[in-house]
Length: 484
Ligand code: NAD
Ligand code: UDX
Image (cartoon, rainbow, N blue to C red; front, side, top):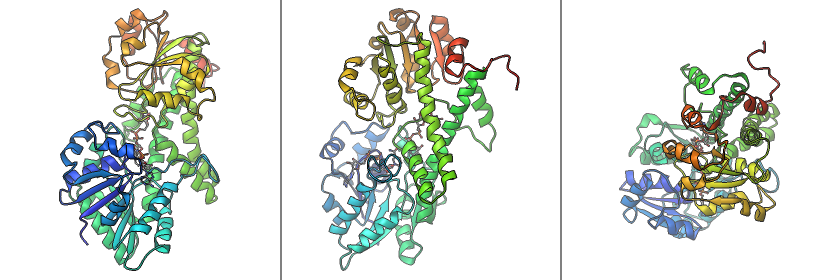
């Protein structure tokens, strides 16, 4: 078989960009991206794509209608395809066994059942979604139990490593592509087909073939390692605040050891995004299920540290503002979980804002890419409050950063958008209540310049004002005088 038709079930942050790049790099392949959501497909076929990713629009514009198609015709797409990517969401379960930790595989199972129901001929089914180790086994069971005469399936694992905000760049130049397959002649043939697709633009030495289970676990392990680095540096940031060290200097010094490396050592208000927490919790759950409680506890600590970091930051804001934010207006810069995306899933901003709202603060929020309705939804959802009506009255969303700061007591930076660094903070200081505070949860602003302008400035992993920081970091260490 030479793959001519590819179908992707799930037109989300992964399915959309991944298949757009496949269509762009493989003009000889017809790519059909399908989704059950009519709204999502409508957006993919419009001028305003459902997700913001630098470079994505250009790729879609070039390929859409040529060899890239978006539709809700799931059955037709499955029938036509030689190779089917399953790229649906696998969120943390919110019910039943494994609630709050296990990955919910109901969407994957629905896809497997739909494929079994309508497929004709030979199909390669590719797990692109992040799944627990041995999920491919369940897909295989469903497919083989429902296989009709003349139909055969090969299941591959091909996890995706793109990061949001840099998805197109990551897809074009991946560090590696993993392809896990069955150790048989038919398995090897399926692996060769998928390798052939990637070989259109990815060099062979970057395409790693491994067992299906190793491939599945490698994805969870990669995200766990990345999240662990962020939690590690965030733990050090708390120590920096308590001792007078500067986390930027420490991270730089540590990162220059070539065995450690410099990436993913930026201390922050905590990691967010749809993957890290979900995949860590999934790993913890798997470890518990196979009776490895020490392993489970080890990885659990990475997510616990993340909760500690964002809570610590929110508490510090309250403490610095004279222990009360009730009826004070705080200007929030950034709501997305990182820059260059409009995605807010698990954004630390949701948790920091909720904490401040709980304390009675009024929040003026500005984010260059997040939709107003998304912010409203996130802050009033049942996961963070049981008083949505009260919260609605406390939150205002703005389109202009200079409007956000009017009469505010403080600026709180929660996403590292580049544009925040370009603002005229002198102008902002003039219209704010005094003393005016800046809490930079992303360490992106020029703190010395802000202090000169008269801002009381606080950031992660460094202290400018001794008293405030000592209070929030435990206070009990007599900084400058303690002896080890
Ligand atoms: P998403 O929520 O953005 O998109 C998933 C899409 O699948 C939705 O549009 C949904 O409507 C659709 N869908 C669900 N069930 C369906 C069904 N039965 N039939 C048709 N469509 C269906 O999710 P995402 O962020 O693209 O993530 C997809 C998978 O990729 C997850 O397993 C995730 O862990 C993994 N992943 C995500 C990222 C990321 O940065 N977002 C990176 C790597 C891996
Ligand atoms: C992550 C993985 O990087 C990617 O390989 C995987 O496919 C999906 O999950 P993503 O969540 O999109 O990607 O973004 P990432 O760049 O990893 O950032 C995750 C979070 O960690 C963000 O909130 C980011 O601000 C934070 N972060 C990252 C830090 O706080 N410090 C760092 O040094 C790096």
